[in-house]
Length: 248
Image 1 (tube, rainbow, N blue to C red):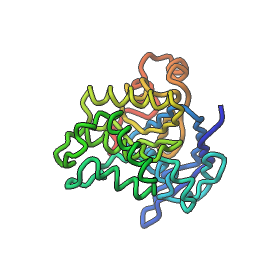
Image 2 (tube, rainbow, N blue to C red):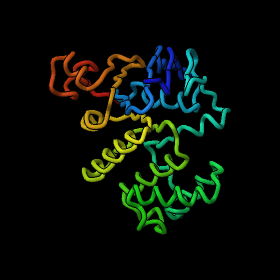
Image 3 (cartoon, helix red, strand yellow):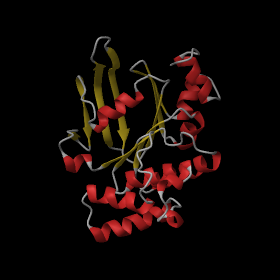
Image 4 (tube, one colour):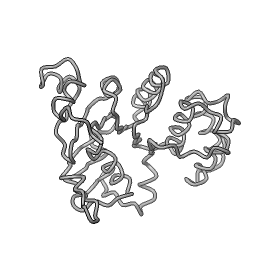
């Protein structure tokens, strides 16, 4: 299976009075059509890596290759093939659900006829159809997360990046999200997600990468990782190799 994303020996340091070497030669290959989960304690470098992939930060060393091309934030056509749902709420409380999607579609310059069909499809798929004209501040937390996912999918991206997608969701919402992501994978979508939930990683992932202190310390399928560490619990393996101390 071909790689859709190649992270090649990427290093990144936050400059300043007290520099932080956040990524220390990370190399990861993500295959087309797989779900790859990135695990790590707080401060491990997960969000920094995602921000380097998206072009919000520029690697000090190494390179990131997407669909065979070095990823350049100025290449609008290439960047538009990546959908991103951040962990933080990026919604406008006074806008309606449908207005968020229309605004995002205009930013992508999607043709109106196609945009209308795409909006209807996503509203239906993500169980938001009845809330299309609802002011966002009146939505539940789960609905807001589903709306942000719809915004990330609006341009039919080849690669979907999700940062803690099930953070704060109730069990029913989490289960719906997991089933939805597996359905997207079956359609050929490639998904990279960061998560703290071992159950989430174990349920949806084809492969897992665990990073700590800016270094990739473990990688493989869930079964490979469990077998290697002679364990039945991904959480136990995670604690074992990253340490038991609390992280800020």
